[in-house]
Length: 80
Image 1 (cartoon, helix red, strand yellow):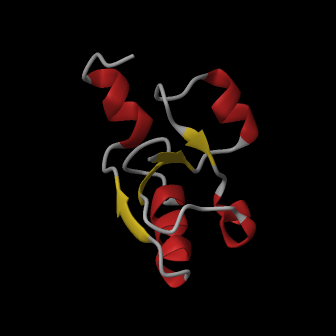
Image 2 (cartoon, helix red, strand yellow):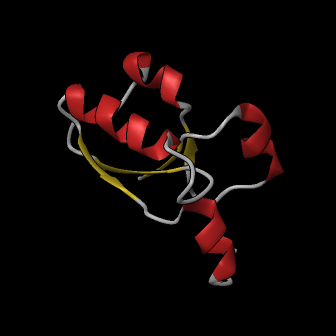
């Protein structure tokens, strides 16, 4: 499951199809599926939101990966 760790305003501007919005600050209280693998992303390589969200998820014992490049590289590659 893709998790978009960006702000509400950024989420409203666009997102990767099928992603769930979960800002980093909301990770500690988020209702998560225990067997799911989560992939965090944010704006791009200069943004550490996805890294911070992944760390917070890992601290909860959740299986997590970080999508390097974020929205910036998703768009650069021509994905919707």
